Every structure is written in structure tokens, then in C-alpha cells.
Length: 270
Image 1 (tube, rainbow, N blue to C red):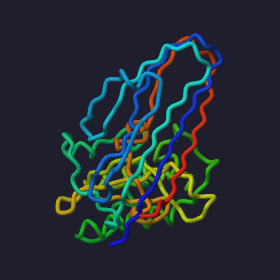
Image 2 (image 1 turned 90 degrees about the horizontal axis):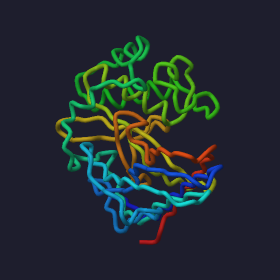
Image 3 (image 1 turned 90 degrees about the vertical axis):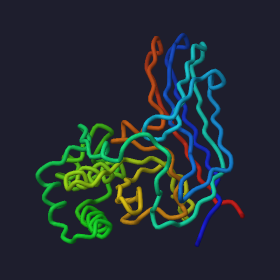
Image 4 (image 1 turned 120 degrees about the vertical axis):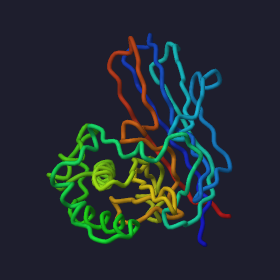
């Protein structure tokens, strides 16, 4: 069974027009163990992290609530660590979480299935659900063209599918919408992807997971047409991109805000 040791550094910077600000962030920035990964080390650096409250939400995401009231124009949040991975063919298993898998049959504004999405989902024949999900991933992959300029964070599954254009967020929303429409629980996942190509080795990524009673949760990276292997590190999950976002924040008295994100994923010698 193949495996990797990956080092990850995920840096997020907020630049504010005004230094006299107040902010609170909800951080889903902690990788956790599952059938395909073991977290060796992980830490978060952020103003206020020492006094942050933390909890594990119903989906199994370790979450921190961080408050900042420092008079600074720049806020930097860094998550970094080392993760051992192995290729499980996309199988995550049953990580410890409170939510029943049937919760992930619920649609959201981002993942509502259009008639066209329902049609492509129903067109997949067969009784064996794992094979159905692989065929569904292939059908969506063939229908869509990856285009970074065609959609935005508010684009929903129906809109992206109608245009046939999108990015990993759109592919994952479409897969979730389609799987749920045929009664298979599916959810949105954020994480990291290491690629051999140096230019592409920096990647914060998104994919989907579907639940099968005999296997647990299984990942499907629809944007690449593959199941996650040992070059993926799973971070958090939710009903859609908003629910799984690594950082969600509110601020007051900050003026205009500029966001920059830098993610580096490096393979280490084992």
C-alpha cells in the first residue's frame, strides 16, 4: 500500500483599511485522523488562538472560535503540520462524528439539484452503489470543463452545470446534488492536494464524499475524475462549500478588506 509524508503550510492574510477593528473567526483548520491519513503534528498560529474556545462540531470538524481586538492592519492565520497518508482508494471510513449520514441528503442553496442534474443522476444504471458513484463522477467530469473565470463563490450547482464550466467547488456541489437526488448521502470536503508538477504542488482543494453502508465515507475528486489517493489530505467537511469553509469571519470597524491565501504542500522523506 503506497503512502506519503506530507508537510502543509496554509497561510491566510487579511489586510484591513482601518487598524481600529474587532474580528471573530471560526476556524476549521485542523486535519484529523481517518482511514487514509494520520496526523503527526498540527498547529495553528493566530492572534487570540491561545484563549480561543474549541469544539468538535456534529460533522467531526475540530473548530476554533478566535476573537481579535488588536489595532493592526494585517491579520495572519497559519495552519501547518505533518500528515502520513496512505492510498485507500478514496475510503475515509467512519470518522467519529455525531451526525447521522442521512443528514447529508439535505439540499442547500448551493447544492439544489436542477432537472438536468437529476436527469444525469437517473441516467446512471446499475444496482451496485459504488459503481454508480464512479459512473456519476465520470459523467459529470465529461460534461464539465474546468474554467477558473466562469464561476464565483456564490455560483450554485444548477448554474455551473447549465454552463458546463467551473472549478473544484462547482464540480463538488454538482456531485453532491446529483448523489442526494438518487438517495445517496453526499458531502463537500476541503483539503490539500500534492502534485508532482512543481507549479501545481501548491493547492488548497475541494472534493466530495458519499456514504455507503458497507464502506463508510468514500471520496470523489470530480474535478480530476479520480478518487483521492495518498497525495490528498482531508481537512473539513460540510453540506456545501460555505459549511466546510476553513475560515469564516466577521469584523467591525475594519473598512475595506483584502484577502490573500498561500498553501504549500511538500512531500517529505519517510
